[in-house]
Length: 550
Image (tube, rainbow, N blue to C red; front, top):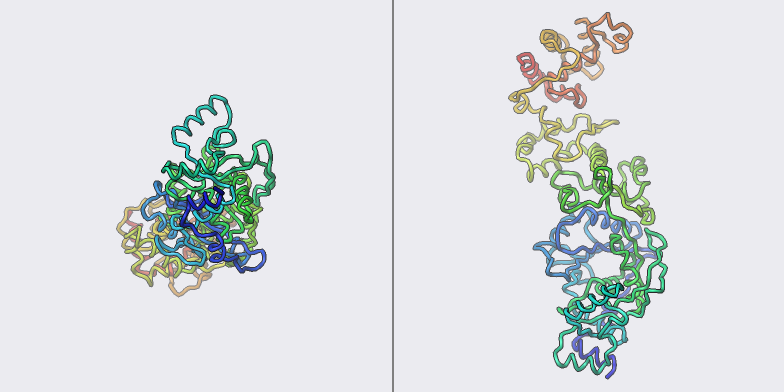
């Protein structure tokens, strides 16, 4: 009996690996092109940390003329959830990060290097496992769960590392004939990698993000094919990244400790290993302590959360790039309307210790992003969001012509309004502009310096009777408010009031506040001239009448 005969006994129907090497040829790409992937398991919602990794992968591939593909790692089928792949695909689509290749639905994919679901690649894995057995680098292991538990107990009692290695690898050194006899007798088995590593030897590795790292060699005889015939994560990683031509594995740094094993697998199989870039987890400040974003505790951990509250996908990606590369924020400031693909993103400039995720900062970034939208874009996105999440906003926006005017206030200026961070903010920010909402709502008018009823009514009445003209330009409009102020004993200029406060009741800014509060019920709004232009005289009279009667 030789290794090839043993391999044929275990995998009688598996093809030679030459078949797959020819079927999946090396990619014809520009020199330096990065081929990388997003490779989640369909076991739950997509985490913002996963999107962070996918964005780093997507932009790295784009920048170099490479390939970004979506591979679904579904070999652990006990944990798989219904429509898990759909959730992954839709999450990438929601953020305009569709892959160049890979899964595009539960059952469909695109690209020449598939299948892109690991559960559909069983024959491929078995061919490569057979190859490893033929090379004497893998073997059938017959250890029962009870035997493995007994080994573990002895190791713990002896206070040595647990695992299946060295003298503890009970079935590693059976003769080929003994292995064959057990297989023919129907004894259950799995297939293990035969490690030639030693824990007392070190390997040196240069991670793209972490830099130089030293590890002990891997000496564990890990399982590569489970009892169901499917591979473990580690073996699938070897086969898939080899055949799919992955040049860079960009993944969470929880996998850093797997590097010695993965490099060893590539070396023993005779394949070129990819470069590894281990991304530190996104952290959260929790009462002064940094911790990982939690799926259980933090709603913002799920990428679906951003769609539900209506944060534009571009804002989320801009923010993630802010925390990925510290130079991005300044670049974006200088290039507000340029695609992020033009940014010189560098994997090796990502944080080694873990970036802090700050929702307040995200919303600030989002306000800047939304401030660059046209009124039509804000209308379209708000309506799309509202149709799913807010019927009242749909009803408000149904008067499209008027709503576009409302959303156009202070938009397109040198300093556009920055009051909308998410589409769920829109209603609160514009509801006062709709008469049916404003007139019928009880309002506690927050008047400031000028708050006597009689004085407020004088200002409102005189403004409508003598000073308002809808055809006035902005300068004329403001000059008239100054004239109104002077007529009623208020300083026409703030500086005049500050110089001689005893000569005046208050100043023109205080008079403007009375008009603003009476019109909107608020002290802080976008430009009042534009608000008046949109409301028109009839609406203003109704609003002033409401204010007079309150």
